[in-house]
Length: 101
Image (cartoon, rainbow, N blue to C red; front, side, top):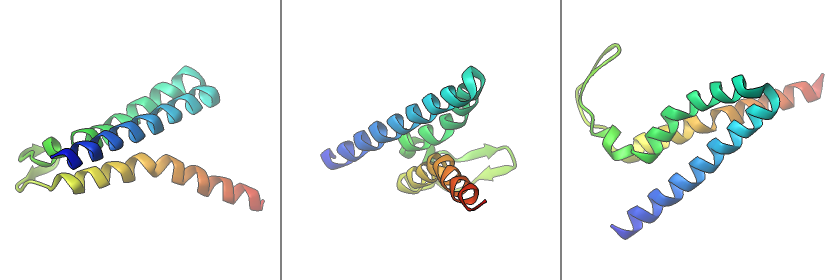
């Protein structure tokens, strides 16, 4: 149990710091509206990372259909990280594309 809580703590700390960096950068680049928009974006990935076991255990109706089996918490956590890292990946791709022109 101890190892799981350390892992969860690191996941929470790192994802929270990354989300905060995103929001600050969005504020500096796009003002309050940009920061607010990005803050709305990071809610779902943070929820998946911070509460992966609870979200993975959900069975029931969703927007289009239903979830019929629980999802392992690790899979939900990894999906949350992928979604949270998406803006950074897009920024890197954008930077490389504009460097060439």
